[in-house]
Each structure stands twice: as C-alpha cells, then as structure tokens.
Image (cartoon, rainbow, N blue to C red; front, side, top):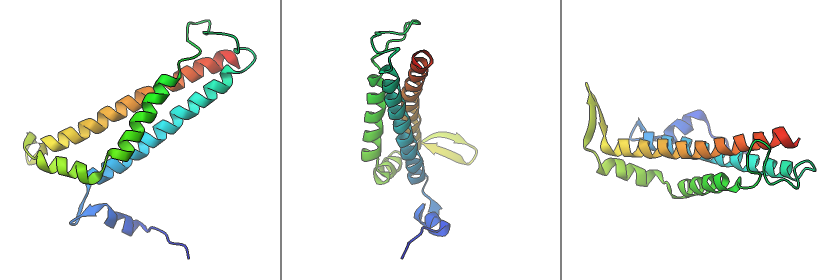
Length: 151
C-alpha cells in the first residue's frame, strides 16, 4: 500500500496552534536551497575537472585570460561545508527558542512588530544564502571559462 502526503496534511504539519510556523517553513525552504546550491556547485566542479582533462588543456596551468586551471576546490569546499553544517545543525525547535527568548521589539510599524529574535533568524538565513550563492556563482563562472577554452 502506497502512502501519500495530501496537501491538507502538509498544511497541518506546517502549523503550530493553528498558526503557520514561519520558522519551520523558512528553515525547510532554506535547507532545500542549500542542498540545491551544493549539488550545483559540486556538479560544476566535476564538469570543470572533466573539461580540464581534455587534450587541449591537459598540460596548461592557466587559461590565456589569466584564469587559473586548478583551485576550483575552494568554493566547492566552502559551499559543501556550510550547507552540511546548516542542514545538520539547524533545527526548527532551536530556532523557535531563539525567536522566543529574544522577543524585544526591534522595529515597529503601525501594528506590526519585528522582534530581535526574528531579525537575527532571518539575517542568519539571508547571510547564509548570500555566502552559498557567491560560492555557487564563482564555481559556475569558473566552469564556464574553462569550458569556453577547453572544448
């Protein structure tokens, strides 16, 4: 018998006390994005290594435009490390506790209050995404430069 998750059940899982769990939903989306970023970065690294082993580029140390041939491992290592740490260590219960502890209002606009805990949580997510995105972009650009010349 095959079990499926219906959309109504998914909405129940994303709620706490009848309200949507923004921390849990945000962490779920962020973890999925970090896994995709790590896979794309690792894939571009592997494809760049295949291109570097072609007969045209096998004995070169750098491309004619100055791009180094080896050294692509640094952004890959950075992205894989950050993605692994965040996916394994970031738990919704811990983040909810941080949001609950730091409940002092940081910003107010009419009836909307943004607390210090929410500000810290979303700043962590945005900065982590920026770092992962930068590593992924560097890896993809490096791969495209290698492929342009070597194939």
